[in-house]
Image 1 (cartoon, rainbow, N blue to C red):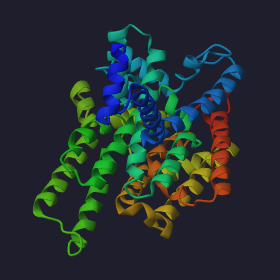
Image 2: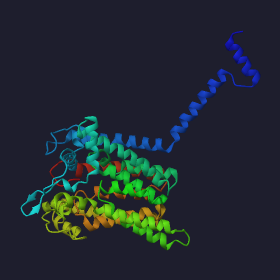
Image 3: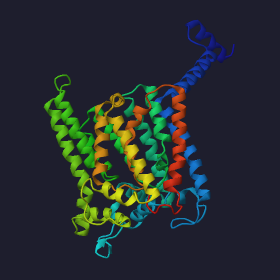
Length: 424
């Protein structure tokens, strides 16, 4: 009897599985592992993200093919050129040349310049350019896509803290196909900010306060959000204090929330202080932001909550302005209903605290124009409320409506058609 046959005979006598049985068992284990992998939450979230990017890329390419010659691209640009227009070009300037130490002047006011764009995203792209030698336009899109994928994964984890897993996954679907989701794959800082914002909110809900410090630090120099997050932390502190009889709030956690809240407030003004230190002008950052409003005939210093009044005076005299302001008011009202209404209770207090704080921040400082809808992107945690109904008819309808919304947003705000000179 051959040695191999003797080994098989010995396995049978000792009650061990034969090599054929082991092979079959191994195949079953591999198949089970394969099925388990495909049931993993992160695989499902990444599949959703990848599928949504195919749809959005197809829409973007359709518009790129029809794009006429403009200040940023030639006619019918490729995807990467089409994805770096508008503010994407300013991020390119920051990545290549940095920030000016002397503010450009237009008459007696500060002109448009790079200080309006925070450094985290272009600095990261610049570092990758130095490491890889790959050109900016490709790396900028790659970085945005990578952070967008990370944001989708973190958003699932965030939603799964307040919603069932199936509903959390559908919230990720809405995040990936939302009307503004093309911003996830262009040369803008929004995807990077969405990732760190989602991470920060996740840590807040988990009450891992000290871990918030570095996350808030990066988030606040990616997109303006430190002051809004500080207000959300203040509301969180007040709520936990008022409910401490049923939800214990020990002194060490109170101290942590206060310290992190102060850190967030400091992070919220850090870029202003950095611009002051480099240029010697205390108002370098705010004057730069106000430079974009000169196109609307709005000059002077920033007075909180007045930009919307000034915007109404400018836009309501133009049909396109009527559309933007009316749409913005409807969107803001809809978000307000979601925040304070019964539906908002489904996602808990902290996500509503953030949404209310960020809306208040926008109302205080933002001048309404075609960027209005893009600046509402950080309110994406409210998608958890929209994701709750389980009817498949509702879910299919809302996804299709979102995809149509992408087409509308790219048509109105992203493609360059001469109807509006302001960035999306």
